Length: 559
Image (cartoon, rainbow, N blue to C red; front, side, top):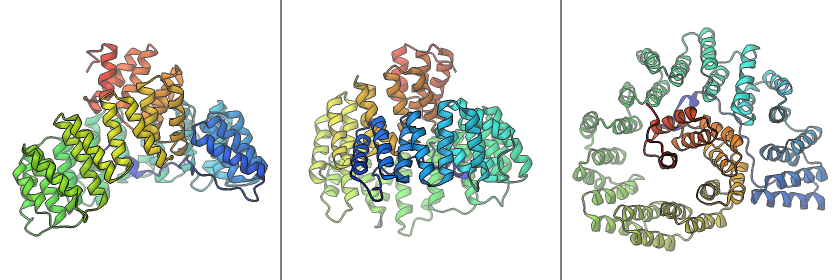
């Protein structure tokens, strides 16, 4: 979920259990030659993104070693590979060898859902709900283990109908949040009503109601609930932060900033207020905050001076920004201040000075490596703004000479190559990252998505994305890439399920644009327009949205 502070209603909820696993397998106890060979084969297959082969090899290893850890691994990989038959065999072995019965029931529920056996799934979910805090596993199963969102919604409704949710506020908040993610407005409202009845006067319940009203397209009613919460002078600071986050989700940045202005202030709240006012482009209010902060800036506080420089820079008071940045006396803030100084000099049309300041930082042996590295990346960005491709490439080349095969520089250069449509060189840089760090999910996903989106090497893209999925199966960006490559492979219905799952995990313009394109391909054009509008609301300048609208010749997607 995107947001100004990375804070949202999910902060109130208990996170769903991770469905990933360590990429390196634990060696089996008393390994035989057969089990060791199969384990290595499974690891190599996993590293190659061949999930079917990995599942087969790990199941063979688990059988040969009678090892519960390998059986669990085989179960999880088989579920990820959608190999129900092998998952059933692995799970049976895992149960026989022992292990966590709660985790096994969660896996059994997911397997039942994948097979469409909702009766068995309900039985397993009932077992989980009866265990201490087993409801957390249920949230995980319904979030990422089900076959599609509609199936999750049916099971969640059944739990509510059966009165199975335990009388714990966190549990009700978690299931209410899940209903919202699944776009089940009626069910979410029903859960909220029940929570209000069970936990009257609890402010976190009011926050859930505001969130549910927002998701249901009732922003005025949501604002009313938030206003009532805000009027409570005794509201805890962390809850006031969440009220501000809800205002942010409503797009009401001034109200979010005003909420944060209540109560004691520190550098964190000042920075958040500045960010919100900048996003609302309310330069008058931001200017007032600037004056408030500068009155108390006589002391050499690095954090305060850095923030004042950032506000002055946004207000285009570049000379003042330069003074603040250069006045940062030391501490960790000194290095971002030096980087921002270069940016301000560039804005002042003093490019030679900007580049010199970056070169000085790059050569400063006393600077942290991260700051020196970032100076090369910023120089490349400024050269790109100056429409100097040779200068941009030279900055990257010098950066890589100073920091050989640095993944951040390689990643930035790869994105630059992709922007220029030079896919071969983008791929080369992504692969250099993977040579040094074969488990880099960012590089695996970026390369897999690039191949899926910009070439016809779909099977290769799928294997790369599957490697990333094996490490982070509930990562929205990776699920989006998986759905996109399925679409490219012509598996349109499967693609839609995965893309909608990704969008339920993260409201992102690119994912929404992908959902819209797949729906359009399926002939569901009115529904597709809804997602194109959602993408436009999130970011009207999104490249993927612009490309699909241009491809489809859509000039009007409605209000």
